[in-house]
Length: 262
Ligand SMILES: C[S@@+](CC[C@H](N)C(=O)[O-])C[C@H]1O[C@@H](n2cnc3c(N)ncnc32)[C@H](O)[C@@H]1O
Figure 1 (cartoon, rainbow, N blue to C red):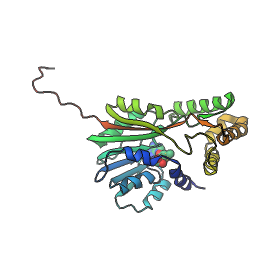
Figure 2: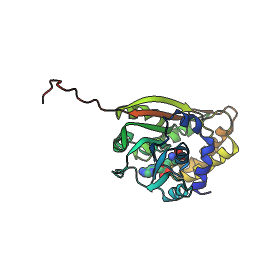
Figure 3: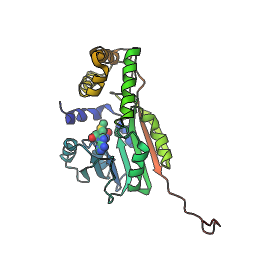
Figure 4: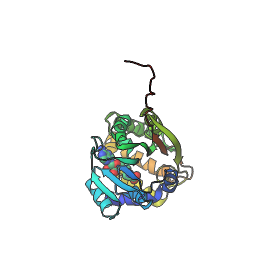
């Protein structure tokens, strides 16, 4: 199964209705979908009347997004580590399951926020502690912790981004108006995983070659233990899926005659 097929399956496992219900009205607004993937959430935004500009670095995913033929959405190739097209101006910024790829999210927000109107909004959704599932042995947890630390220090991915969304937005001078976590059939659920979810985890592990390299000869044992953990009746997720909605703050105008001279 290719990555497009993998992504197609995921939408059904998420709590999108709760997240979309928290957004301000998007009808007639322009929304930037950063890390849009195959355009699932762009399609939801467009269905609610938004004009969507989806940006992503993977051409295969963009092709799948374009193939939807959405009348009010365009999908463009962009590396979000670089400055955006200066002509882009939007009312809302949506980024779901992509903020963790920006380990310095503050720097990324500093690049992205100038493209949002002064009264605009920012909606971020991200996982916190992907491998946080119980019960797991100390050895398995140590591997996942070490792998997460490697990913963060190499600037590849922050496995604990979910918990940082609010503080990153506040440091970027945004006003957080809503924050909650949602259940997720793949990441944040208790009890045994659904068979299709378990299969997706198996395939995720085949893609995670750096994790396998990190584990070395322990890999098969630890992967089996993790997949076994997800099938247990007493399985519990520590992993959460976090949503934060913020308003871009309008800088107060200096009041006339404030008497401050420089
Ligand atoms: C896990 S997927 C999430 C897709 C979709 N937003 C969703 O919620 O299902 C992360 C997406 O971020 C994109 N991405 C990661 N780093 C990126 C970068 N530097 N520039 C552009 N897109 C990036 C990936 O190509 C991928 O489509």
